[in-house]
Image (cartoon, rainbow, N blue to C red; front, side):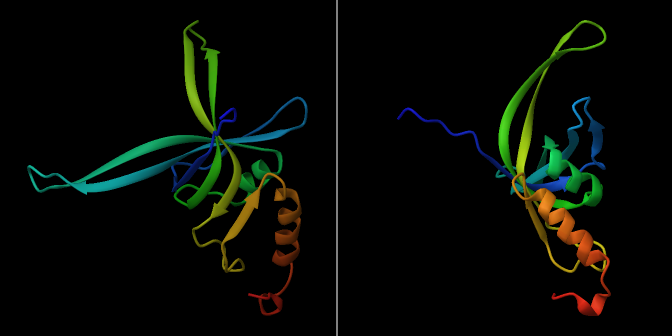
Length: 147
């Protein structure tokens, strides 16, 4: 097989509000971390154990706009994306490495504002279109919404 796959799927909770950066090119970028947890019972002690892992998520352009506007600390999200290794030199001259998940799909699983009564899914292909649609819906009275 000549092809390869770089695909990550996560469901977790935001550890803090997204950090937003606008690059010189005008592109918008957000960074946030989500926690995923697994629970199991220790066979020796019988105690319930919970392990939590933190994952660094990056969104670009339209998904970054959606992340900035709608995501808040504690929200549950579904993320699809790919792993991307990042290397940089910190202010002390030390080389640092990190593995980010660059999201290309985002679904908000938590309840949102009262006007938004359904979960919303976004992908890097349609985030701008969906953001506009949500803004249109937000400006309508509650009784005119189709859900």
